[in-house]
Amino acid sequence: MPETSEQSAGRFDTVLIANRGEIAARIQRACRELGLKTVAICSEADRQAPYGKTADSFLCIGPSTAAKSYLNQDAILLAARLAGAGAIHPGYGFLSENAAFADAIEKAGLVFIGPTASSIAIMGDKISAKRAMMAAGVPCVPGPDTALPDDPATIERIALEIGYPVIIKAAGGGGGRGMRVVPKADVLHEAIALTREEARKAFGSRSLYMEKFLEHPRHIEIQVICDDHGNAVWLGHRDCSMQRRHQKVVEEAPAPGIAPDIIQPVGLACVQACLQIGYRGVGTFEFLYEDGAFYFIEMNTRLQVEHPVTEMTSGVDIVQAQIRAAQGHVLDLIQGDVTCEGHSFECRINAEDPETFLPSAGVVTHLALPAGPGIRVDTHIHAGYKVSPYYDSLIAKLIVHAPTRAEAMARMREALAGTEVEGISTNIPFLRALFKDGAFAQGETDIHYLEQWLKLRRAT
Image 1: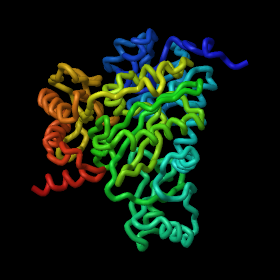
Image 2: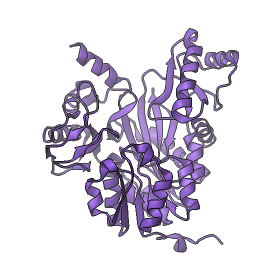
Image 3: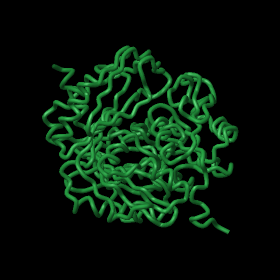
Image 4: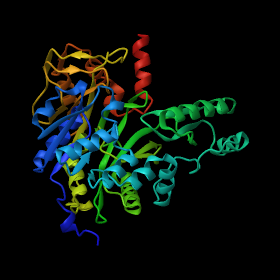
């Protein structure tokens, strides 16, 4: 007999956090506020992580390399059993969108704090995701909802039907990898061959698909939260167009210059898509936006790095909502309750050279963080913290909120001026310069703007 909502709600009291860094600290804070115990895990390189000292249990699960620790599914499941955890939160990155991991957790009698394995599988494959979105009425980038065949003549015909330029993408891709722009027909087959091999090495599948390449789009996201009882809401929208090499640098909410009557039907279509596939937890629909039209590109079936800007504008604690959904609780808000106020920015502070963007490992000898109304810092570092060369360079997220976009930009400039990290190189000087840029201040940027801005800086 299936569980009732009363039986399933609150079905675990201890959460193992299968991640590291600032997101591990963020999840731990949300768990404590919900009255849940936490189990922190670490690799050999992260033994001194500060969130380990505040967890109820702290277990080392392997060597410094991620493949032998944070990506080791067996070690994580063993740690959960040893510590008595009833649920596992994957955070972002690592195993957060691994359907096999979600399935293994559920088969072990534990709760995966995220969507079901089937939802991850559907949305993790870009072709099946596009097919599901088209069925739900979500607008998609022009191009077929099937994988590219091997036949060269058929591939040429598909490209001509779409119209050049086109973009080739790995069906199992993500993170800016496994994609290649094809401006004209004479380089099509070379691009296909290169992308197939890149996809095979990175994602274990040679499957590709083709879409129209939009030349001046913005990157817009819609955040959703769903429960197991047929309820779902969307929490406004974000602009993540400030990207370098397909990696986000600055995010903001709401996306400037998009009227409510344009975005609302898209948000409702995202909710409908979630209901159709039985989605649970939090997720993000990513779109390209050009000339007043939205085009779906992918769904991230996990917590996003940039979730704080939506938290600041909506007033909803997205991490807590995600955990409560996994506990089986009914969503405690309806669409009419969602109101987004003011404007928020997030800067990703990375341990990297501000000119070359090469990673910078070492010991943080001095740290000063800004504080005050409308300022939030999500971080795990402190003076004396050793930044490891083994993982992503993100060391902190600086978030501000203010009544208007102009006020939020001014607040971010002051917050960046008051942020000091010594002992390692960071991208703070780069971020300070970016927030003085006139076109960015006016909201006149697309996903290619930052790369062009950097080229001009290097040339002068």
